[in-house]
Structure formats: structure tokens, C-alpha cells
Amino acid sequence: MGLGLPLIRVLSGSQFRAVLAHEFGHYYGGDTRLWPLVHNARSSIGRTLVNLSSDSLAQALSHIRIVGFLHYIAVILLVGYWKIFLRVTQAISRNHEYRADELAAYTTDPQALAEGLRIIHNVSPLLPMYFQMEVAPALHAGFRPPIADGFAQFLTAPSIAKGIPQYLETQLRNSASDVYDTHPPLRDRTAALERISMSTQPVDSTPAIALLDDVPKAELELLEFMVPDAPVRKFQHLPWERIGAEAYLPAWRGMVNHHKSLLAGHTVDRLPAVAATLKDLASRLPDPPGSLPTPERRLDRAAALRWQAFRGRPQPQWLDHRHGSRRTSLRQRHAPSGAARNPATDARLRNLSPGLAQSL
Image: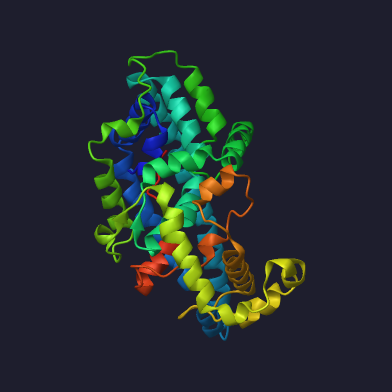
């Protein structure tokens, strides 16, 4: 069971209480005792399928026709069993979600739970973007920004905030449930909650994060869990208002200076001309140590380098959004120089993903 720290920042006290009751509903209903067994069974079937479907085994058995035929039949039967097993267990999982919703609704407030589910469905897809675009570059530079408050501000950026209602409308309109889904559609869950009129708890509109006595400490523990190889305790805690000038700008200047020979002639007055030479720049840009980027990735890195060279005064990306900028995915393409230079740490920073609610 896990609730991401940034999610707590965007939930009210009543919503957080209802969501937490849903999670404990899985414990009360015995779901946490069943699913380790289901997981082990799935893993065993999956490993068996992989081994039976290997090309080397199929080639070895093909020399004896009857054995090859029996092997083929065995794989077909096991695949069929695998599909049936998945359908049955996923249907049970969806039923468990309804049951946990119902328990939470009766012990807290169905409206608060419905609102909490909508918020989580809305903002959860944005968490990896926020961590990779905003938090990871700051960590690379050796700074530790306020994660929870930064995410709340990230969501208020016009280009982000505009898309949230549209995404929710899509989620509510999509009532189709696939047989392999672990969770029912949001529309069906909220409709079931609307049929429950009971409320046993007073409304608490205070942000749920107020329940934490020491938010910076919780954020530090989260980062230590997510990036165990990085000395995050030594990173300077810096507000977002200063991250642009003190973290991003020096890193961009260092990156541009490192590749200044590749950027010769790339001046503002020649922007239309140099814009057509992006592929050439990508082909001459050295690959990061120990990696082999795809052609698309090389183009992204070249575009990021050129953008860093022409970029004026930097700001956190969510501030760029507020000012109408469309540059939403370039700055994070390069890992700037900073305190965390361990390759394993760099890999974790590139793949930062917060602890989301795993069973909502």
C-alpha cells in the first residue's frame, strides 16, 4: 500500500481519510493475503511459458515430429490457461476494488472518496513528468527543492491545468472495462459511490499534507528511498524561485561551453538557417558515456543543447508553462553536472517515479 507524498499535497483531509480507508479496506477484506499467492502463480506460469516458447527448445524438439507436435500443443494449452487465469483473477481484483470503495464510503464519506479518486486519476499521470522534468534536474545540480509544494504549483500552470478537466472528462466518459483490467473504470466507481448517501465524518477541507509534522523531513526520506545512491542529505534545500538561476542556468552554461565547438555559427540572427541543421548537430554530438541513444533521442539531445544555448533567463518548467512557453520536454534531456555523478544514480534520476497509490 502506498500513497505518493505529492498526492497528499493535492488531497483534502476528508479525501485523504476516504482514500486511506479504501486502502485499509483491502486489508480488512483479506485481499492482501490472496494477492501474493496470485502473484506467485502468475510468475510461475509466465516463466514456464517463456521457457517453453524459447527458440532453442523449439528447434531442439523439431527434429522429432511427434515431440515437436506435443510441445506445440502444450504451449497452446498453457497459453489458453494463462488467459483464463488472468481473466478470472482480474475480475476478482475489480470486485475487490468495488468492495474496498464501499467499505471506505460507509466508514468515511462517499462523496469525499469519489472526489479523491477523481483527483488521483487526474494528477497521477503527471507525477512522472513532474519528477523527471523538474525534480531530477535539480537533484542532478545538487539541490533539493520542495517536492510537494512544487507539484501543487506545477498543476496550476495554465497549460497543465487546462488539460486536467479534459482528461477527467475522458476518464468519466470511458465506461468500457477490459477483461484484463485490474481496476473498474472511474465512471463506474463514482457511479457506485453516488448510490451511497451515508456520511459519517465531518468535512475537512484542510490540505492533507498538514497532517505531517515535518514535510521537508518526509521529502528527504522519500528521495533517499527513490535515489539511494545519491547523497541527498548533503544537497542544499532551495526554493523553486531560486532553482532556475542557481541550478539550471549554471548547468546549461556548462553544457553549452562543453560543446561550444559544435555550436559555432549558431547565432540568433541565423535561427531559421540553423534550425534545418538539427540532424547534423545530432550526428556530431558525442553520446553519453555507457549509452547508445536512438536516433530520436539524439535529436532530442541536440534540440536540448541548442535550446540551452539560446535560452534566456531560466525558470522552473512550471513557470515556463505559466508564461505560455511550449518548451515542455527539452530541459530534462541532458543531465547537468552536479553532486550526483554515480552512473547508477544517474539512471535512477532519469527514471524517477513517485510512490503512487498501488491499489486505488
